[in-house]
Length: 260
Image (tube, rainbow, N blue to C red; front, side):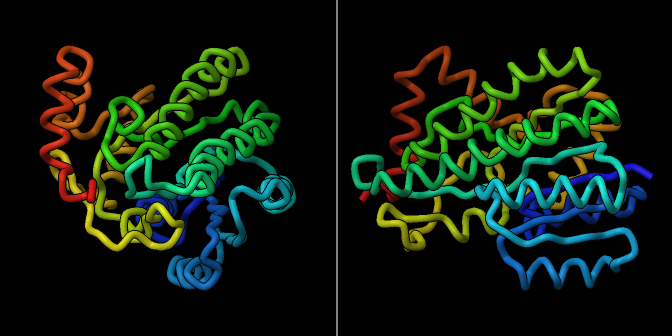
């Protein structure tokens, strides 16, 4: 029976992915910083094929625990889903550098380090890596400088790794969603590192986490390499490349309420 490891699995997209892979017959290894939330999710799924390990995804020791559990309890790792993430809503000039470091650590450095540590197991299974990027990595979004930078770095790293890992039979699916209805936005950081107090602005349609999870599962079954589920945001990214001045004017008007 195949095994999937999902980070950020206690809520939002991670939880919907856990439900989907559980229904598909996978063994699940789930992790999240929210220990109580993770325990509740495991109870909901039933413990027969599910193991949860709570912890901070930026902690290398947690990575060791997760991969050791894969070896000892399941004997394999077939799919690694780098889903855990955080964001901020604050103009760059009003953002404490510590916030930018935290966003980069969670959204870029942690998935990179976990993936590199997981490569031996993935080679054995000729498995797959799924990285949850963002359209914010393809185009600037005002008030999200740190998030845009982290997701851009994530996409570039895994696009390079795709070609290198393919020699070992490891496949790669990069997912570029736009605005989703998940707790990542509800828990967004402000410029001072505390929870953001203002609502978010959006481009295009805000999609549900269960819809997004279904799209990812389908893309994996189809053997796709990249998933751009929100056509409106994909077109906006093209506009940014073709007419950046026009894009900035539209973006500035749309996000004016967040600029203070």
